[in-house]
Image (tube, rainbow, N blue to C red; front, side, top):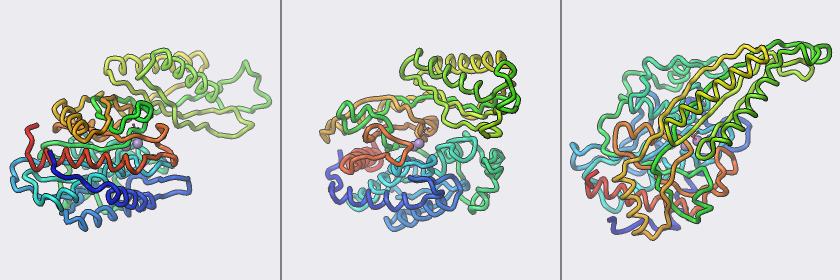
Amino acid sequence: MISNLPETNEMIGELTRLLDELAAFSDGAEPGVTRLLYTPAWSKAQRFLADKMAEAGLETRFDAVGNLYGRLPGTNPDAGVVLTGSHIDTVRSAGKYDGAYGIVAGLAAVAFLKKMHGSPRRTLEVVSFCEEEGSRFPLAYWGSGNATGVYDWRKDGDRADEEGVPLREAMQDCGFGRDDLAECRRTDLAAFVELHIEQGMVLERMEKRIGVVETIVGQRRYAITLEGAANHAGTTPMTMRQDAAAGAAECIVRLEALASQWGEPLVATVGKIEAQPNTPNVIAGTVDFSLDIRHADEWRLNAFSELALSEIERIAVRRRLKHRITPWLSTKPVPMNPSLTRATERICQQLILPYRRMVSGAGHDAQLLAAVCPTAMIFVPSKAGISHSPHEFTEPRMLADGVSVLASMLYELAYEEQRI
Ligand code: HGY
Ligand code: MN
Ligand code: MN
């Protein structure tokens, strides 16, 4: 057990200052933070973090896709690397904590451990994964996916964003996508611990300070197109329409009703929708919409996804609409490492922090890292459960709680070389 912890007020000051500085790196006029992969704001944020890691005395490097690592070498080079961190990209019009908090808190924890305890036995690293959200290109987890072998940047860079910019081109324009940069694939990890805001309201409702994540839900994401016939809104009788917007609306209402019938923790969301020609006096000829389905149980996730897609097909056929369904993300529900979740629980008890074991309804890099090393995920409460919104907020005291738990975990893993 670690003998000392960061002084709370000092830690609060450091965390809020770094989070505010990072939040300033934002593209676009929308309120909140918009920092999409390989955009100018993304580039400035990664380089800002590289400077902060270097100031903390860590060895910094970028890998070939722009994942940033800060390294505190261990005295036992054969004992593997203990990694902590999260993702630097955001959704559009995001808050300032999702992803960024895990990086900033990881840096603060490692800098504290270096200052108080010097070199660890196992090497400690902080990572700023380049992309997790899937907000710009039709793929998600580009950073941790390249680190764990889910993607290979040399082969998987052809998908284009909404402006038709290929991922590979955006990556190279940012100075990445080069063989002379560090290899992405990590095969040397002893453990990964991700600290993140809960993005839900369970901890706040249960008056808990820490969430000990047991399972991260699986996800299915689809791009769906319904194609009817654009026509005059005034002269086309209701009985003679192939209205893609009405078809999409019926699908959305039906999916919501089905998900509610299935009950928690299943969720299904249509968050993105575009009608063409998107004109008030023209019947929509085409509608593109997204579908995001999640569950903690793989069998039920698959069963609901099949049902949802068959309902979309049934509605489209009845309305004489062509339909196209493109799957673009599929992640399994992933359990966290039981030994690490027990260690997190014990640390919360020792620090007298009320905690709760729970499922994560949000996806995280931890669910990819869990395939290559023992992985744990720790939550701090989100005010009113709000996230993916400029109104995202976590009490500064609770931000510091997370660092205390994370520093204790990293100390046991890297300085005490705790068996995992
Ligand atoms: O969508 C999610 O679950 C995460 O925020 N990427
Ligand atoms: Mn997110
Ligand atoms: Mn996140």
